[in-house]
Image (tube, rainbow, N blue to C red):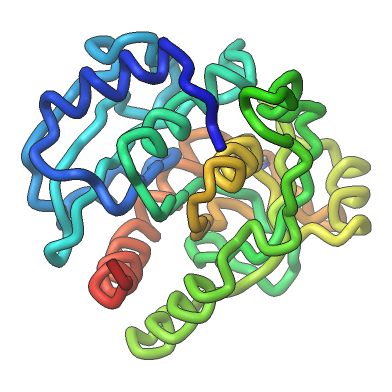
Length: 275
Ligand code: HPA
């Protein structure tokens, strides 16, 4: 559905010349989760600054490298580090890499990120499978894209998080003995963390975890016809009645702690993925 945009074409052509095999899976790894690519057989390591029109990562915990290679024989292009509204990027810049990955032929998009747990049952270091989201970023990458050229932007979001991938993730989590919570992710802009009143509000509207990314990338991916799987790491609890100060160091440390189980889970999912 994406129109041919010269910047996307140029970035995709640059990568196509370097990547050996058309990627089946696109992956975006968030705060402290760069280890997700440890099990990958890597062909190419490409810093974002070399890719035409790619934004640059400016945040701690985000490497700013694009890797191509494979896991369990499935070809992957993986972003170590993503872009956020709170860095000053526009929503179009944040979702540019998703459009490039779609242009490269990716069919699946796997997203991981750090999130604060709003659901009192979740513990820091646990994973949450995202089954739905609430976009409170006040933004949408499809604004201004509803034209004859690009197709209708009123895309259906009732199954943005692919049901088959959700079922596969749950099955593999049980097999691997990994605790996999599930719930609704609410996306906000940050960078300030939530006040107790905001936390109460986010929980009351039906959210289980809160984070500063993911939702706009997912909208872009659905628009591009990609099958999306999102698993977030609960890096801290965010409960109004017992709220304690959260630091970026705590977020990164807990994300790193959860990284091995998330890596194991994703590897099993990828192994069983249909081509
Ligand atoms: N709030 C918002 N974003 C986050 C949090 C949080 O508590 N933890 C990790 N990302």
